[in-house]
Amino acid sequence: MENKYNHGVLFYHEHSGLKDIYEGLGEVTKSLSSMCKHLSIQLSENEGDIIKYCESIKNDKYGSEIDILFILGGDGTVNELVNGVMQHDLQLPVGIIPGGTFNDFTKTLNLDSNFKNASSQLLSAQVGSYDVMKVNDTFVLNFVGLGLIVQNAENVQEGSKDVFGKLSYIGSTVKTLMNPSKFNFKLNVDGREETGNTSMLLIANGPNIGGGRVPLTDLSPQDGKVDTFIFDDQSFSILNDIFKKRDSMNWNEITEGIDHLPGQHISLSTEPNMKVDIDGEISLETPIEIEVLPKAIQLLTFPEFGKS
Image (cartoon, rainbow, N blue to C red; front, side, top):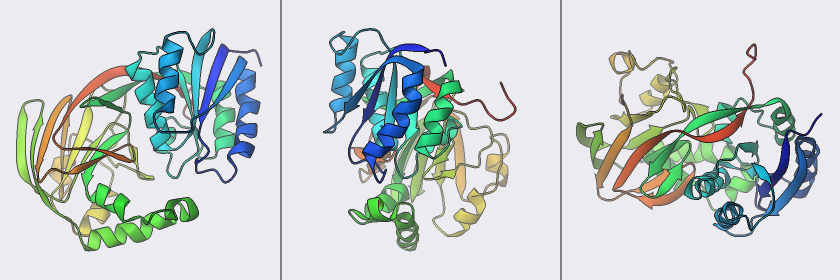
């Protein structure tokens, strides 16, 4: 295969969800080396390193002719690269290779959940433009959540995620649903105000969250808006209801317990202040301001079956 790119940089860190990160790197670089004339492999040792490397790339201090970036890791690591690209205005395509527990956005990009298969798919992937959420001063690709989704993540015991993967979340989810915490909220979506009391708020840019798919059929990370879901009821009936597919035109008519508000500008405050989960990382607190940045990042996307 003819090299598509001059110089690619592959970011990774040793605490990836892969059993053997270095064996994984070997498999991944077989594919990426055929895409790039020169491939640099960069270890991220500490949180924030990837953002610093992006700054070096912007200032031409990292290397010459860099024209593509790759990331091998989970959703949190992907989020760090997204922030590096956005903060330093790197107009470079990004290839995401799954290396975590859920790897939600790779599903949105039609990439296989296996890192080896996904890296092979990148050989024939196409560049697509995707929306990004700016949440206060942080950039978010996939989702913003608070309430049950944060409570669930915190109930996963320290270290169990690496050992049991998705299984650790099953027990945690049941525990969370049995003892949910509710909070008061004030929400403004494109000038429409909502207030109330809830156990969970979810603001989705991508359709895949926590290993599952949001059943809103027309939810898209390429339409210039995000979709806010307000959970009115914390009972188990929500779990049954949320798996029924529907579109935004009839969601609020046929969905019990979950209200839907699409929009581009969102303000959210809570009483008390709540921790906020962004793409799997609990790193913010309310109040938050969200702005959708349309088509702000370029991501390698594998064509859907039957489409060129």
